[in-house]
Length: 256
Image 1 (cartoon, one colour):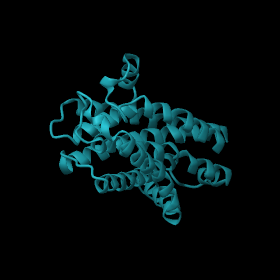
Image 2 (tube, one colour; image 1 turned 45 degrees about the vertical axis):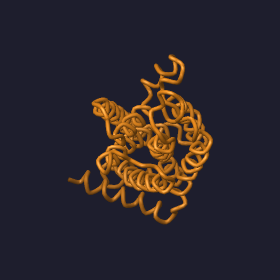
Image 3 (cartoon, rainbow, N blue to C red; image 1 turned 60 degrees about the horizontal axis):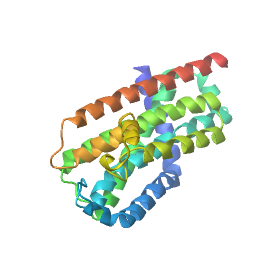
Image 4 (tube, rainbow, N blue to C red; image 1 turned 135 degrees about the vertical axis):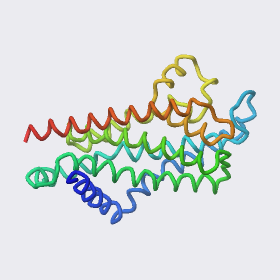
């Protein structure tokens, strides 16, 4: 019970920082919005290619952009841990009665709240731009689920890395180095049947592509059973990432 209450307190604490600084969410939304505006215009006529998976490029692109927004937001979740470390807050928590696991759990729960908000905002922007989601409310819910699972996984990995390196420069470099290749090695901009075979193999192992394909499939009227497999893969990936975050924090505790 203490873990739950302490995690709730840590979540509220972390969320209060975001509420006082709403530009943090705004910054995470700027790039996905720009990409949606840019690529939906540049590639508008690509839907006329034989075998393209959608009749409108904005319909094809928007689920991937929602996933992208949560990926970017989750990837920077470790910045809060680094700020607490540099200000000495993290060490002060270790000498209080607060349950140690709640420090990580609270941060991840706060991440879930912001990811859900960002997902709804991106879906709303996509609808304003003309996207039509045939999967209805259930499809949108599955898209948000896949996006949040991916965001949690990368949020946990970000926290694990932040606890290990404890430098903003190192974390931002790692995020920039990893996220762009993951996005381009997925079906975000182009159906995978139109890319080289080696890229299709990489995409099949790419968690970002799992979320995009599952979310995109959930929003079509004729989705298949692969969605459940993708969700299961994302869930396993998130569990492994959370374990790594907890493990990294336990190593940090032993070092102080």
